[in-house]
Amino acid sequence: MISRREAIELYRRGDFFGLGFAADALRKKLHPEGIVTYIIDRNINYTNICIDYCSFCAFYRPPGHPEGYVLPKEVIFQKIEETLAAGGTGILMQGGLHPELKIDWYEDLLRSIKQRFPSIWLHCFSAPEILHIARVSGLTVRDTIARLRDAGLGSIPGGGAEILDDEVRRRISRLKCSTEEWLLVHRTAHELGLRTTATMMFGAGETLEHRIHHLEVVRQLQEETGGFTAFIPWTFQPKNTSLGRTVKHEATAVEYLKMVALSRLYLDNIPNIQASWVTQGLKVCQIALRFGANDVGSVMLEENVVAAAGAHHRATEQDLRRIIQDAGFTPRQRDTLYRTFFLH
Image (cartoon, rainbow, N blue to C red; front, side, top):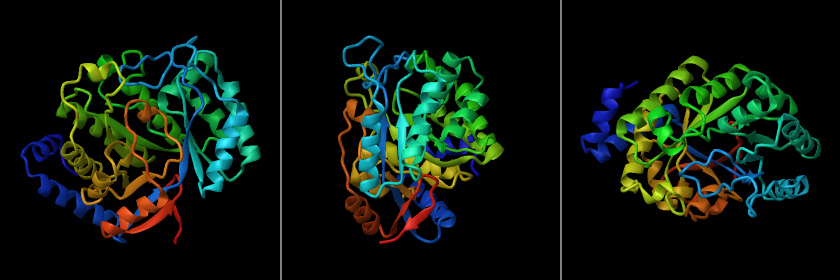
C-alpha cells in the first residue's frame, strides 16, 4: 500500500518506466498465472434522454428532443439475441436519467429479459441512474437496489464516477450525484450481495491531487466492503462536448499509462485493473498490460456513449487475443465477475 504523497511523487518524478515496472511487479504478484482476460458482451443504452446535462457528454438528449428515444423491449431482446449468438455472456445496460421511468418500468424490463434469456448476466444501471430511479419512485436507495436485484440485476457498473471529488464534479457535472452519493450506491449494493466495478474518467481539467483523492475513496470503500471486482480508468473524450471546448490539455497516452500503473499500485486491494482499448486504441492498451493491467475489457459488440464523443476504435475477439499473446500473456475469456471459463 502506498500513501497519497508517495503516489503523487511516483507520478511526478518522471520515472515513466520505473512506475511501469513497479505496477507490473504487483500485477504479477496478484496474477502469477500470466493470464489476461476479456469479456464478450454488449453495451445497450436503453434511453438517451437525460436531465443531468453533463458537460462532458455528447450522447444525451434533453426531454422532448426529436432525437430522444427509449428502446422498445423487442429491440433490446434482438440485441441480446445477437450477443448470445456471438458467444457473449452478459450485457452492460445503461441510459440517461429519464424523468418518467420509475422502478416498475425497470423491474418489468429486467424480469422480461431474464424470463426470455435466463443465462444472460445483467450488469446494469450506474449509481446516478439508481439514485434517479429511487428519487422519482419515492424509494430509498436500499429498497431500489434490492428490488432491481430481485428482478434480475446481477451487478452494477462503475459509471457516473468521473472524478470522485466534489470540486471537480460541480464544475463538469453540477447536477450529477455527489461523491458520497456515488459511494452510498456502491456500499449499499455490496451490503446487498451485489458486486460492482469502479471507474475513473480523467483528463477533464482536474489536478493530480483530485485523481489521487478519487483513488483514495475507492480504496477506502473496498477496504470496508470488498465489493469491487475491478477498477477501470479511461481518458476524457472531448469531441462534440461542451467541456471539450474549454479543456486546454487532452490526456496523452503516456499520462494514461502512468495512471493505469498508479491505479494498480494504489488499489492493491482491488483484484483487477482494466485497460481501455476503446479510448486508447489497441497498441496503447497492449502496453498497459505491462503497466499493471490484467484485463482488456470487452469485445464490445456495441458502444454509443464514448463513440458520440469521438472515440471510434474497434476490436474483434481475435484482435484482443492477439495483443494479449503478443504482450506475453495467455488470453482467457471471462464473465462479468471475472470468472474465467472458456479456453481456446
